[in-house]
Image (cartoon, rainbow, N blue to C red; front, top):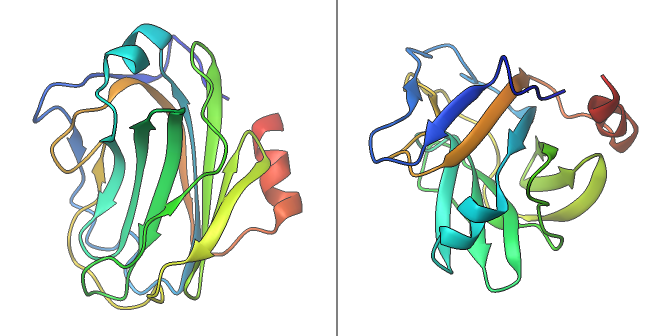
Length: 173
């Protein structure tokens, strides 16, 4: 679970992100699960422009997770690819709460991404691309230009697709 004392803090400035060498991270994966805890204040969320994206994870032409600020609030977004440009980004139908720790999970299997917020199904869809292919690019955490303001904790990457029951257990750990 997220904590205020051991988490990474990002201020949203361009270029503030953590880049990994990551040549083996997600290399050759055909399925996977990404889990993380985030905490975004309402002040920060209100300051973000409508229809703006805020990157969480980015591996070039492999996997991306981010937050979309739209007129209804903050949405969880994810996509994956086969080594070519990303296909359709899947957007959660429910919003991400502010001023509290939130567990975000994306499950990637075949051409499907399934999104969960605090263990509850938040969206699912076809990206038009299968999660396949090798990638020697690094993994950027709060990557691809930064622009995320908030806390990040307990980032976990699994090389298998979790079931709904397994995802529901993650916020309890």
